[in-house]
Length: 530
Image (cartoon, rainbow, N blue to C red):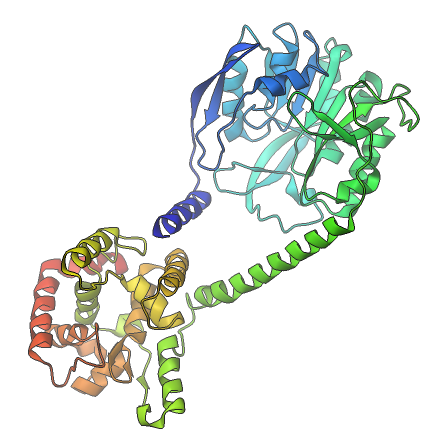
């Protein structure tokens, strides 16, 4: 569970921080085409790519040696390389990738396999007009994204902008590759929902040279946009089929309404012989032509899944929103205080007056701040919410001695005291771990310590360092001495049993130990919190 949370934290941080990633060369041994090299991008969110013989053989149903193919939205070249193998070294594969960070990897793949492929990489987007455009990406290192501002559905979560170059591709092709266009047999677009606009800008090429078209029905397209994509292909004289990839890539034919029956769909559009859609024309060899019926069961399943997704989002919002709010707002109470009040309501004999007074961290004695760190979490400023070294020591201690010893950090104790309930169940610990991750993501360490000092229980019904200081020492928490601070920290493991005003020998010994730790740590331990 903890390992999973750590991986999620690292993934979140990697997503928010820009880094220029390189690549590594991988080799694939294809039964027919032999050894093929491929540059695998080392971006942490880039899945390992594979060059498979079945995909190349499937493309050879449309592409002959010496042909021209175009890959729009080539990314690193995982679709470009199989297309180029089908075209062969005498053919040409033109690959467009506007993202300069990804383009470096695509350019490397264009240089590999010169005896088997011929690839011309182009670092611009296929747009209706020439100019500069703003694309949006999912992460700060620009691994996945595109011209998403053109989608009607703006809930795509791609919030990292990148300026790219755009050119009218039809004009560019007729100017620079006029001699290659008569051999154009295959055109692929993967443009994050912008496919219909790209295909519309290439309608002259489509009608004149009749390449097979493979495109994507992006998951964020609404029903009208999906039908618009179908109309663009139909008006250019194409019949859409489901694209299955592999050695037999052509699936069933698709009607206009079928495009809304799938969250995401790849299409292979085949040109009709007359250049316009002809529903009575005989299909090409090996192509299945049955249409996909709209299924009520499928629609119900999608509705249920959508409802469950909204329930999950709502539940997540209930959890996340308070954590974000308390980054700036001072919590008026805590879960532990609420529980204590409820105990008094249920059983008047357990009723106790709650003492609690919020105080900003800057008005708390540095002795008190250092005492809490020395007593509870000496690696507080170093870890990301979980002290794995302390966890391992506690596990070994519990195994050898059979007595439970905890290893909770200050961040974990804030999560428990502020939002949860006492207990040692695995479920409670799992929820606590989730809150700890959120706190570490949204709060600085200074805020974590500030909240902890204000909600920790220092005696029966005494919550927060200011209330404890006033009750036990009749002074502000800003004036606490080292000895007084150590004594307050000494009762934290069990404030209902241990007393500040009448300390037992154990509490006194623990307070002395905390003082020695404070001296050892010194003021430098508070430096990262200033």
